[in-house]
Image (cartoon, rainbow, N blue to C red; front, side):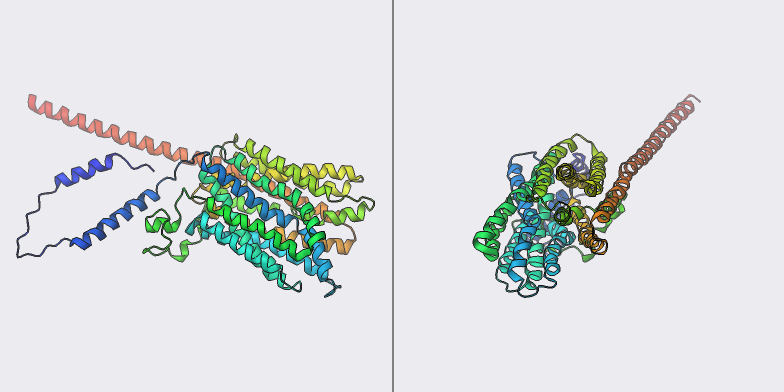
Length: 512
């Protein structure tokens, strides 16, 4: 909060009320601090004042300026991280061709785990990344993450078998991507508020653009320079991401900066870090609306990722005469980018937690489109389904960060997003294998797609509770505030009445 202007006056009154201190004699030692101690006390006072100001309300987002460059850097981050992940299908085929002499029997299963582990680790690491973001700030966390991702991707280009890729690509590269990705969501809320929905839509549209272009690029690169050189070329994306992280100039101080009373120029502080119990801010889950949101989103995602993994194989079995099957993912990528821009802008006009209704709408259509996939008897109908699915996929993704800021505020948004993404890693990793198991048992994907449409409906129903819980809480707060105001008015009235009765009694005594 803004410091009160009455505080200095109160301090002056306190100082004036104190009696003068007699001058000490030459024999008596001075009780106060010496010259060196005075500087320490002054420095300590400055630290206290800075800490007090750091704990006040966060600065007003500038709504532009340097923030536009931050937006472009975050857009590159989303595009490079998830563009590479979404294009893993192209790398998958090349890995099968490269390592097939090693193990032909279960090579597809082993190779699929490389991409699955990578995607799961990106979301699984997000709660840990949120702690680092709070402690060290968005810039340091993103830069170190991009460097780690670069090392993991480069080392993946020197392996001789599939197993080392579990470590280099599935863990090191994915963890680096996670450390680079999560701060890109948080930093936007520091620079934008009124335009946050639109900006998030533009940033998340980066992954759609990369998803459309990267498969074509990787296909040409693999055919010309093979797998390992292609991975080395992809390291350029991570190097640019490393440079982009330096644009995340902090506006809200990190935990280390608050403790040191500085602006981030010194990495180390003479003050100790917060106790470990405060590293993970589990108090977020005391906010009922956030707890419901963090439960509803993962619940909806058990079927969310199934079409993205198994759609190509379904088309291969159902439409054997179709050659350009990749056009389906291009349709999803194009309309997903449109949806992120469109619904990101619409979210700016929805006040408060009512933005959640957009996610409810998106989950409803995602679930419906998943159920319609087996019903499409013509490839053109399947294209229409994918266009609709991509549009509402963009809706779901673009408003995730704005909702987090509405539920917990900018100070806690980092860990709120981190916890949520960590929870999301479980259904996104578990759902597709279950669908694959159903296909192996039944010989078709029909049941798998039907069942994949159920969780988005259930999650959407859970999310509908958030605005109701929020409005109920607001009514309770207003009622309590009204009661306190009434009590204060009654106290003032009683004090006035008692003062008036005293004056009346004094006047009557004087008359007598």
